[in-house]
Image: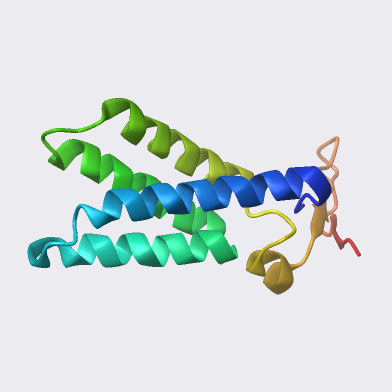
Length: 127
């Protein structure tokens, strides 16, 4: 389910924070030999701010930050580790109600069966 209200606004804040981290870290790679990393950061940031395929974009963002951690010499270790953790946490939490993902996929409520006799049609649309 995509949370609404304050939790949904909190997820917007997390998405914007991760996007800002990506843009700040990606700007150091604006040299011609690493333009692909800068473009990847920009694409992931746009996807995260708008909430398009948020779990995949957040995982990609975490991988980009991890790659930066491994390839840079003078790194701010705390900053990059915080960026990795927040990116992966956002991938697990999902986009929230105020995102494009919510408009595409809608809100779904998954009812897990309590026993081995569960019905496979335990997913229902929530209005």
